[in-house]
Length: 345
Ligand SMILES: Cc1cc2nc3c(=O)[nH]c(=O)nc-3n(C[C@H](O)[C@H](O)[C@H](O)COP(=O)(O)O)c2cc1C
Image (cartoon, rainbow, N blue to C red; front, top):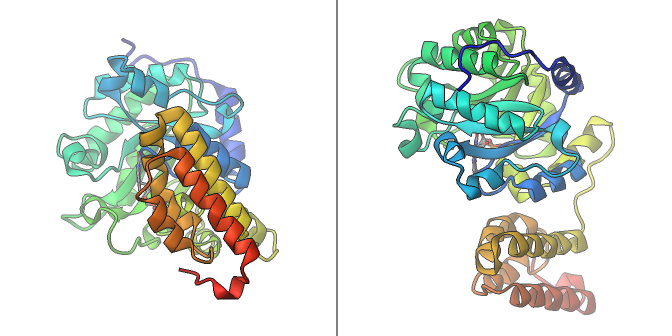
């Protein structure tokens, strides 16, 4: 185990990260069971500048669990624009796991200090670290010392039982050598509910000199621009809106370039359903693959005439061929029937 040592730093990786952060990047948030290599690649193709793996449990990573090892496998070529996110409650175990994550070749190691899910936070992992910010900073510092790559932290504005002081937390993390902080502008006790208050990100940005990535409640491409303007943050990170509508990255790029955003066509939406289903069935097995794709259908099929009806039919079919046939039949019906006759939902 390498703890508390000072690893020779990968200056090229640091320069590359600084370069990305200097260009107002729009990032894909880490999402469990969603941000696999396929989805990261998809979002990158639409214009996401940086992506993250889903969070990886350090105990399972250290135990060598094959399912977890697979989560940190990167696709060829994505290394410069992906971070591997780890989570755990024990500082030494996080340090050990960060070395395994580093060996997988990402651009950064990201530490999850924001997951609110009770079974994780109660054990002291994820947002559990917010209950002891000095310990959080010590843990982050130990990882910074142990690895060569830049270390980032994704966290929330506070636990939520007292007035949040994310500015003080950010200063401690900066002093610990953390390269950037993602701030989900909700408390841990809020979970995913309530509004994300971006003014916290603006305040934190003023308190430190490391880049702040603002996260939470970005729903449209116009929100991306608004988040940059209202917070002055280096980067904006998108979670659920990308899960439903990965085209948000393309639209955000268009708006940033002063162009009108072009929403996806019906054909594009249906084709993405097909591609995603095929990918998930190949990687996860047919039944699990079909199930894992379902969470995207509501978003992918919105604005498709009759899309919600198609979705209802797909939700009762667990086969790949059945789902593909339903999509094909729907597309054929759309091209033969006058569009105006088809209800949107
Ligand atoms: C399905 C799902 C899975 C998530 N998994 C993770 C995760 O593995 N690591 C993490 O830091 N946050 C995770 N989050 C939180 C998101 O990264 C993000 O912080 C949160 O959704 C707020 O951003 P949004 O309003 O843009 O969705 C997850 C969120 C969702 C909806």
